[in-house]
Image (tube, rainbow, N blue to C red; front, side):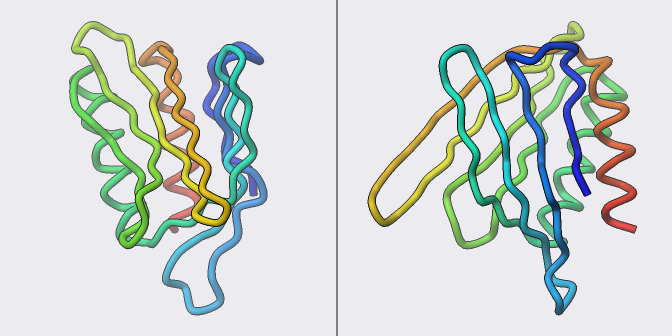
Length: 129
């Protein structure tokens, strides 16, 4: 399953590609594909079921009020993807992708419109069900 943030642009873009649920049902793995200006990364991203639930709750808040924060972050690792609503309809999408061996770090950021959130929320809800 793929989940794509509909930014209506090839750059910036954010997509969770080839999402698979762990055999024990505790979480998911995906390839996080990010394009932001000159930054491009395809990163193996994992997250737990409870992290997805928190992330969805935050996305719903931003979608409903235009303000708030939704962060998808594994429990025991530092990488994350974050959506922050400014209260006026714009959403900052940021993230930090970390590889320990060899040590590498990519930080990205771009701004999109709040109207892009509803299809993303629906797709993640389908994943969680």
